[in-house]
Structure formats: structure tokens, C-alpha cells
Image 1 (tube, protein in one colour):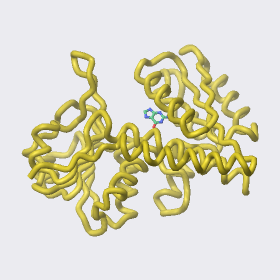
Image 2 (cartoon, rainbow, N blue to C red; image 1 turned 90 degrees about the vertical axis):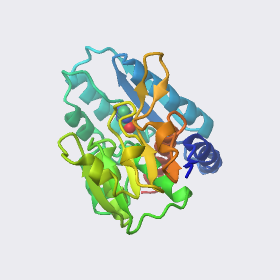
Image 3 (tube, rainbow, N blue to C red; image 1 turned 180 degrees about the horizontal axis):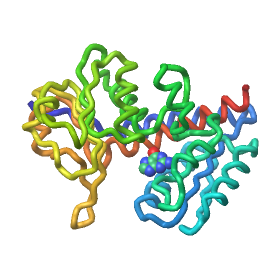
Amino acid sequence: MTATIIYGNQLAEALRQEMKEEVANLKKRGIHPRLVVILIGDNPASKSYISGKQKAADFVGIQSELISLPAETSENDLLDLIKQLNQESDVNGILVQLPLPEHIDEQLIIEAIAPTKDVDGFHPINIGKMLTNQDTFLPCTPYGILTMLKLKRIELAGKHAVIIGRSHIVGKPVGQLLLNEHATVTYCHSKTSNMKEIVQLADIVIVAVGRANMIDHSYIKSGATVIDVGINRTEDGSLTGDVDFDSVKEKAAYLTPVPKGVGPMTITMLMKNTIKAAVNQATN
Ligand code: GUN
């Protein structure tokens, strides 16, 4: 079997085109979605992600503003900035790019963002709503993965999904979203003892670890769907995923590439959440 490759960039482009029209219509109603992104320090990966977010926002017609502050910024100054943005009625979405410098408590910062402006879906209130299947901002990467699976009409109910990785940003929430879709969900992580045997049972494999090419064909059941969330930089500077693409593509039914897979979907869902925030705030 040779896998059908799921090009997230193509799906993302179509979604962004739809959102562009939606935003143009919202503007006619006086709703102008606006996103503020806060970057502390100058982590090169963070800068690259942010530039992708800003390009997408420009395309869709969302006004985006980057507040770039030095690495030495104090936790209190950042908290004050967030409190101020929470109060500003023309700011619909607030995103603090992670990771933050060591001296800043990430959880404290996440919890300072008004849940109604938390377009990352990281606030405990929004995580709780996601767990209980209520309408809320879904975290962007899990939301992007779910959207890809749905657009490709990949069946989820009753299927065995194995998630490799348990980060707060990707692994944990994507498992919960698939559970909400009635999948049977297993989590694997660094302490899992028989990972290969477990992954071999999966109809759907989501790999979000951050280790280049860790999953090859020997882990994959024939006909499985494999979603690669890894973004690893190789020695020659190019990007590669957590999945050994050439090996797995001979066995899987569906496979996402890196780049052009999950990444563009993540950014697109941030746009979707920002539009949702603007609409909610205008109508509530
Ligand atoms: N760093 C890596 N991914 C993300 C994300 O989705 N949101 C934020 N705020 N920071 C990140």
C-alpha cells in the first residue's frame, strides 16, 4: 500500500480563503477581528512561527499586532500587559508565544489571559470545557488535526487512536478531542514500556514527541492513518518530522508530511479561534 498524503497546506489554504470571505462580511457588520501576539525574547523558532501567524492573519483580514519584549521582562510587567489587553475591547484574541524565559511562570501567565480572549485554548477553564465537550476555543494544533481528519472523512468513532506524547499543547488535548469523537484512545509516552506493540494496534497514530524519524514502518499497522506533529531541524537546516516518512508511506493509508502537514493547519485554526472570539465578544 502507498499512503495518500494529506497536504495540510492545501486544506489550510482553502479554509483561509473561506475565512477571508467571512471576515469581509463581519467587517460590513462592524466586527473587525484583532489579535495581539506577545513574544518575550528572541527564540528563532518562536519568531518563525509568529511570522507564519502574521502572514495568515494578513491574508484572512485579521488585524494582528506583535508586542515584542526583551527576555529580561519581569513576570509582573507581563501580567500587567495582559491585564491591560484583557480590558481593551478592540482586542479580541491574546496569544503569548511559548516557551517563556525560565524566570516567568508559564501557567500563571496562561491563567491571567481572559478565557474569552484565550485563542490558544490553554486556559484551564477552556481546557475544562473541551474535556466536557462544551463549545470553546480548542487548542490550535489538536483542532487542526481533527479538522484534517474530518475533511478527509477518516472514520474516528470506534477506531483505536494511539497518541505518542503527552504535552499540554498537543498530545493530551488531541487525545481528548478524539475521545469526544468516540475513538478509543491510548496514550504512549517516555515511560511506556511496550510502545511498539501498542502502536501496532492503532488505526490512527498521532506522533507529537519532537524526535526526528522515531516512528518507522515497523510500528505501523497496514492501512493506518499517521499524523506527524514533529518539527525537527536536521543538521543541514531542513525540517523533518517524528515519522520516517519514506518508510511509513509504504504501509499507511494516510500520512501527513513535514513540512506542509499539520503546521499550516495549526495557524489556520488560530485564525478560526480569533474570528470566533471577535464574534462572541460582539454578540455577548
Ligand atoms: N509554542 C509552540 N506552539 C505554540 C502554540 O500553539 N501557542 C503558543 N502560544 N505557543 C506555542
